[in-house]
Length: 264
Image 1 (cartoon, rainbow, N blue to C red):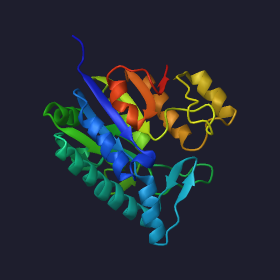
Image 2: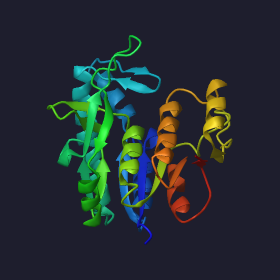
Image 3: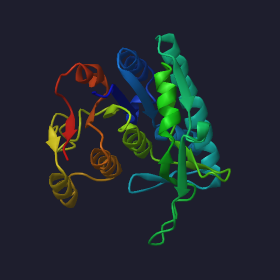
Image 4: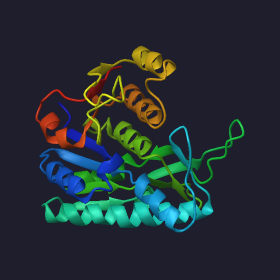
C-alpha cells in the first residue's frame, strides 16, 4: 500500500519580511491539495529588532549565535510575531493552520550545542528527537502545522534552531508515515553556480558535486547548512528534496521541473 503524499515546505530569506511576497507565497501554499507542513525562518526581522534594541546579531557559518537577550528576541519574533501572522493569513485562505514551536506537544527535543573549537553558539539547539506520532495525528486531523524555528531541551529551556534543520528533521521523522517531499523555498531560483547570475541554477546536485562546489567557494555561508540538511534528509528516507524560488512552489507541486533537485 503506497503512502500518502506530504509536503514539508520551508519558507525563508527575503520572502518573510516582504508582506506582498509572503502573502503571494501563502496563497500558493494554501492551494496545495496534499497534506502539508510549513516551517518558517525570520532571521532578518529578528536582526532588525535586535538592532533597534542595541543588540548586534552574531553569525558563524550562516548560523546565529544566541545569547540570553537574543533568545528572548527570537522567541518573541519567531514564536509570536512571524508564526501567528502566518497562521492568521493561512486561516483567511481556508487552510486550518496550527502554529507550533518544538516545545508544543513536545514536538522537538533538542540538545544545547556544545562549545567546539572555541565557538560557543549560546542557546542554540541541535534536534535530537521529533514526536512524529503526535505530529502525524495533527496532520491526519486536517490541520496544517506551521513551525517556528524554536526547540526545547526538556529542562525548561527554549533553544534557537536553524529553520532548515527543523524542516529536515521533521521531514525525516515523518518519512515512515508519509511519502515526504521536502521543499526549501526562498527568493532565489535554486542553488546558483554564479551568485551574480540569478539564472545560473544548478538543476541537480549530488554529494560529490556539492563537496567540489564548496571547496571551490562557489557555495558558502548560509547555503552550506541548507545543503547539509538537504543531504541529511535524503539519507534519512525523504522521497525528494528541492531548493526553489518561492514563486515557483505551486508549479513544482504540479510537476514542473524547476529549482535544484538534490540527489542521493
